[in-house]
Length: 256
Ligand SMILES: [Zn+2]
Ligand SMILES: [Zn+2]
Image (cartoon, rainbow, N blue to C red):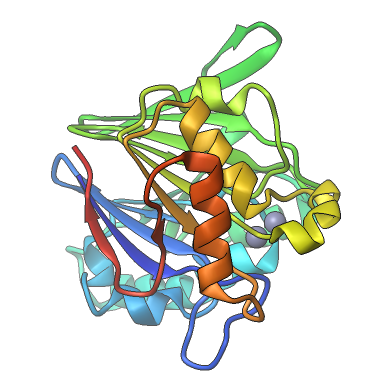
């Protein structure tokens, strides 16, 4: 399994940067996790967009999905002139209803699947939903964030957990248990950790989540452009107890 970081900034990118987007290539499938502004441009450095199999939008905060409008045009226009370009399967939450309805209307470009419609199992009051993308099992669990948001587990030859956006939730390390890699938001430094209450993790909590999950490696992401990366890394490593990789556009990690 290969992870390529296409964007790692939130809620806005610095000059030349992009908001969250991660290409996961596993078992012959090309899966895009989140599609923030700048992601479609960066994607094309690594993959022809026509080769995307699936896109997962974890939640409908604009910095996680607005390039879906560009992808809609890219695929939609191709499909008017070529018979060999298929709609991309798009998994996303169906709330807020107005944002969902707009995207769901782009039937020329997307086969839309609300994540909440996937079959699920309830374990200790937590619903885990599942879908197969080729030989990859994809699991979803709702996080604790102001909008309906799903953390994602991709199980192919390797196992990748992506936190999406969330504040600390005790069930997340269990959901991520045994992941070879944890890709986790690290939104606030200790100085501003009181802000985590609005629905995010601190850098240290990102480390603690990966440690509790027994993860092989932690890739920290979702950075406020104003923060110092040395501080982010040091605080995440304090939580993880091991070296932490900081996401940046173009970072590629083999997961196994
Ligand atoms: Zn968010
Ligand atoms: Zn975010």
